[in-house]
Length: 305
Image 1 (tube, rainbow, N blue to C red):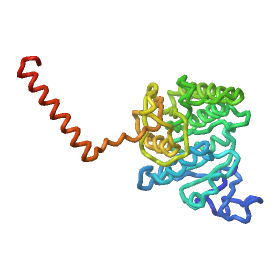
Image 2: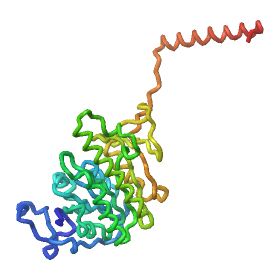
Image 3: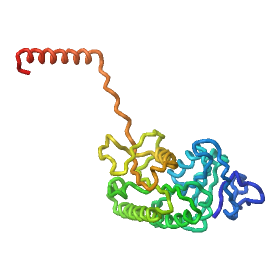
C-alpha cells in the first residue's frame, strides 16, 4: 500500500520518492503505512480536527466527501484503488489535512493500517462498470468490519442503494440485457453488504444511506430523507446530486439518533413559485368574487342558503 500524497509526512526519514514521480515533489510515497501516526490534537471547526477515512475516495461521490470534509475541518485520509483522480486537483494536493493512500479494499493489512486512529469511516466503494468486481461491496465490508472492531472505531457510514429497498426501477432503466444483469448483480451484493454491517451492530454505530439515482450537480442543501419508501410523486422527489449526498453524510456523523438506522435519500424540488397575476387578471378575479358574494347574499335573504 502506498501513500500517494501526504503533505504532513514529508520528512526524509519517513518518505521516499517513487521512481515514476521524481519530477513532482508533491507525490510522496511511504514504504509502509506503519510510519503514519495520527495526532489527535483537535482544531476548531465543524469537524474539530477529527480524523475521517473515506473509502472509495477516487469516485465522484468520494471526491465530494473529501472536499467537503476538508472544508469542515476534518483531517481526511482518502483511500483509493488504482488511480489518481484526487491528485488532479491542485487545491487538494496542497491541503495539509489530506492524506491520499493507495491500496486494496479487500486487503486486511491495507485497511487495518488506514482504520487505526480514525474517528469515523465512510465507505462509498462501488463496483466499476465493465468489470467483474460486482462483489467488491460485500467483500470489502467484511475486511472493513474486522479492522473497525480490531481498532475500536465505532462510527461507520456506508452508501448502498435505494434499489436495496426493492424499487429496482430507480437503477434498472435500460432494456439492454447485459446492463440489467450487471446492475442486478451489484444490487444483490449491496443487500449482502447491508446484512454484513448489521450483524456487527454490537461493535459499530453504523448508518446505511440509500440514495436514488445520483448526478453531478450543485449543492442545494435540499433533500428528502426517509426511513421508509420515498414518495413516488415526481413533484416531491428528484435525482440527488453527489454534493448533496456528501453534505448529508457529513451532517449526520455526530448525531446519535442516526446510529443503527437506514436512510433513503433523494433530491427535493424547489417549492413552486406563487402565481403572479397581472392587474387585469386581478381586477377580473375581484369582480368574479364580488359577484359570487352578492349571489350568496341574495340566496341567504331568500332563505335558500
